[in-house]
Image (cartoon, rainbow, N blue to C red; front, side, top):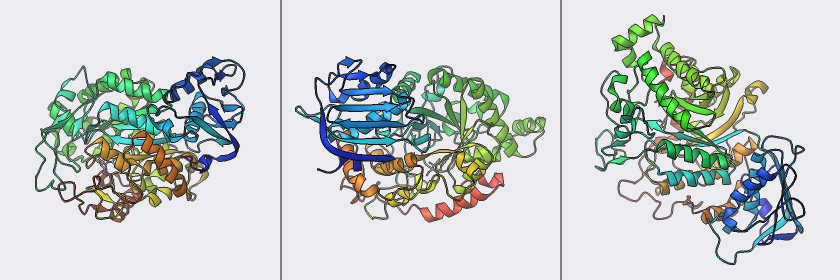
Length: 550
Ligand code: TNX
């Protein structure tokens, strides 16, 4: 039998097996040590798929849950399996959750099914794990604007994130191609902004060819509250994003008065020139929308976007330029910074922290407690860290999982690439060459699944896994990993049991490949060119040109 302590993903700080096993049976009690009753209930929730009664007890052996201040670190945990029982200890409930996920990985793979085949025996090999993450923000972003993923997909991704001890689910909820949040105050947002008449076919934006099929969908505020609560129960913080002031076609299709010109919900991909008019009336409208969101969602973060804005309309629009003058600005970038600071300030007044793409930092949109998701590369990430902002590293290379996974001719249509598993494994989220202070301000890392070319949940699985599993290794340990291959082989069996349609290591299955139709591979942007271009922008302190990415 393979040593299950050596196939854990993400890789724990220390794990070893010992001789013997312990079997969790219908008689095994769930023992809550003093002060650990709430933590024990969390274990019960996470192990529900085992369908064991786990009768509660307050002493004795069995499955013991112990809140132990001696296990230091907010997410640290210890797991010990002996012939007499299993003991999970941590100083926090978060740590206990991680211990439980690790226990589930040590059990037979059927532990990842929603319920196991009859007769499955829950035998755990003896051994010990001591573990803690290096980074506190370990995330993934799902773009539900370019393609809408139904609520059940997001709930399933919460489970997949929890399995990999990823703790931030960033939802990119608005963009040119769709507004995905119900608004009771401004219902045209979801009624009009929530769908488009068709979607660009293949790579044919310029040719104007579409699939001719409407696409749409949105989450009600109750849906979002449910997803956030389901995530919180699993130790995951939902980070909702409303992308402003650009990427605003869907918003402006719904409420043209907030913009300078008429826009429709976009059918094709690319950077649009749809930008809101950044005047007080717009800010008022948007704070109402943010208020609805923060009333529905308890989480501490809201992402305000800030990426890829074309500010030309702000120069030509009389009302905007007059407003700009009244603030004493001559450069629209200062107005861009002002606009984002206004919204971030509103969030602060509601006890929330703003998160922004790195243009938000460069354009002066950040407040002292803002978090910067640095997507354009090392240069801008380092400057934001040096300036004292919390930085989440998410450079296109190698954390953009919308880029394809190999150069193989079978790969399906994607935006470009490749970003391979070895590329992800070699990612250094906290670069050695940075100063201690810069390094300390890297709060974490996240992968991005932009969904222009990800039309459905099955393809999402293909693009995200197994890269997200290797990414989880890097995010958990805070550094590159060189031993993922052997562990991954065992881990893919768990993903099979969980029903995840990942890309096999040998390449796409016939039905995952691009074929010869509109999912056929195109020569997308080569990743080397993207990297070079973005690193150049990333190194620039000069704002206007860096507000347009490619
Ligand atoms: C850039 S990264 C974008 C997205 C695209 C993505 C495609 C960022 C903040 N903006 O709008 O979907 O590239 O890879």
